[in-house]
Structure formats: structure tokens, C-alpha cells
Image 1 (tube, rainbow, N blue to C red):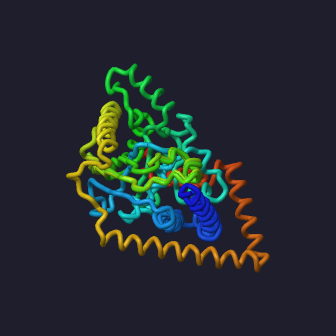
Image 2: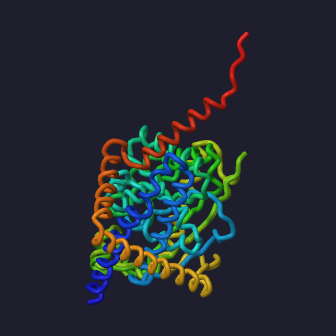
Image 3: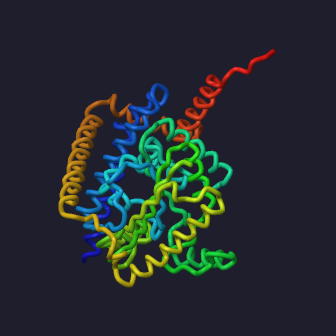
Length: 415
């Protein structure tokens, strides 16, 4: 019976998310499109703000509707507003969604950007909205992805806004099949070749290139090493949530590295639909300053592999004790939780009023219907001919920066 109730909750959850994303795209983000040409910094900040408030509303659904709790240990990321690259173990296909709850505690939802598969950016509504918000989409074609990461790093610098970019170095989520392939590959290596049970061996090229791109553009201050662990159900996919498999508590282990210059587990979306909702999700966070990181590609790769070796040990201990390092600081104090609870519920109320107002306008005014139609046509055209709004904006910004560098280049004197 509880699984059936959870499944109903998850259906409601997905419906609200999808409808809210579409309305936010049409009536909050698309009106800012002219500023792509007039003021890209203002366009980026406004679309990021709209996405951040949408994600805050989503945390209300995750915590108050689905009843998921989180536990946060490790470094305190609220002390400063550093630009960071977040590395997270990919336990399930839903990790990217659960991390919204972590960032709501650190007040950084509007600056959160996620590295995702390129196919997702073409999803009407959510995919288009993520493009406007500056999410990074990769095709898994190395030459093309290098250009994408280089261009978007330049775009981020032009926008001059705080950033927290989430990347999954493992490349895919943990399953029995991916674990076997990962361990088989690692066994052929000369170092870091032990078999992992709780995470996959990280892929190095994408992380190294993105790190170096952000470092060269001077838009990176720290690496945030986040480890996620689940209590209760672990939904492997969206359908597991629909079946009622909801995690009860999610644990986050967080460590920041600063940077200087010079139940069952839901594996994917289908698991949520089955009602497999984790009861608690744990996050352990560790921040590393940039000046503590190596400079060469080889050393960066070894550094990341060493972090993943630590993650494997952390997770092995976690799934024995259902907690990360007990000596680390916990952030779920009553005052913080009370403030966050108020903020997310206010966001839900405001989004509900926003949707009700524009729903009335759509039904009442033919011009609004026509506007919605034009928005859909515009994004379909951009996907077909410009590879999406985000690629168009990044290329436009790259062309502008190149032209500006030519104009400011000192003239060569001729005799």
C-alpha cells in the first residue's frame, strides 16, 4: 500500500516539475532572449535566477511531498561564495536531482550548473530551460566536447557570475554492468587498479579539460568533493520512484579544495515511478582550494583517482554504519532547517500562483496562446539549426570576444 501511495506522489511530483519547467521557460526565461544581443550578462543572471527559484520549488516537492531527508557532513560551504567545480559519485541516475537539496542549504541553487548528456537539452520545457540557465551539454564526441567546454568557459567568464558546476567524472551511474566494465578496465592499469564495489573508476579527460579551461579563464576558486550515500530505498531510475521506492535519508559528504592562481536505492527515473524513494540521503562535502591542486594533466589525473579511492573507502564504511565520518561537522541544525523550510515552501506557493496566473491568460487570450506557440517553434528551430540556444549564445560570445581581442591588440609599427 505504501508503494502505491509513493507512486501516486511521484506522478504528482513529475507532473508539477514538468508543468513548472514549461511555464518558467515560456514566461520567465524566453522574454529575456533579446538580452542575448543587448546584455548577455543580464540575460545569464536572470535565467539563472529563474532556474534557481524553480529548483528551490523542486526541493519542496522532494522534501515535503516525497518526504526525503538529507544529512550533510564535512566542510562548511556557506562561509564564502567561491566559484567551484563539484565532483560527485554517480550512484544512481537521479543524483543530479537530489543534489538540489544540498545546494538549497548553501544558498547556491541559482549558480548551480550541471554537466549533462546532449540529448537532454532537446527535451521540450526542461531541456530548453536548462539551456537558457547555462547548463553544459556534452555529446561524448571528444573533439566536439572540447570545443563546447572551451566556449562555455569563456561565456561564463563574460557573464562574471558565481558558478558551481557539477560534473560526474565516472561518466555513467553505478550498475552491476558498469561496475564490471569499470573494474575490468582498471585491472589493466598500472596504478589505482583495485576493484571498486561502491563507485566506478573516474574518467579523467573530461574533468582535466574542464578544470584547465575554467582555470585558464580564471573562473574557478575551488573543487568541492561531494560523496552521496542513501538510506532506505535506492531508486535506480525514475520508474523506481513511481513504484514507491523513496529514499528516507540522503547523506552528503562534502569536502572543498580551494584553488589559487599561481530501504531499496533508486538507480534511475523509472525506479522512482515504482515508488522506490530513499528515506534519507547523506552528503559528505570536502572543499579543496585551487592552490592545493597540481598543475600538470598527469598529476591532476592522479589526484582525481586518489579522491575516488577515498570515496570507495568512505562509501564502504557508510554502508556498514549508515553514516559518514562521525567526527565531521553536521549542518542540519534546527535554525537552518527552519529557514530552508520556509524558503522552499514560499517558492512553491509563488510558483503555483505564477502557473495559475499564466494558465488563466492562456485560456483567456488568443495572443498568449500564439506566444506559447511561437516559443515552441523558436526553440525547435534553434535545436535544429544552431544545436540549441546554449550553443548559439556561447558561439556568439566567443565571436564577440575574438573580435574584441583583435580591436584591442596593439598595432604593429612598420618602418
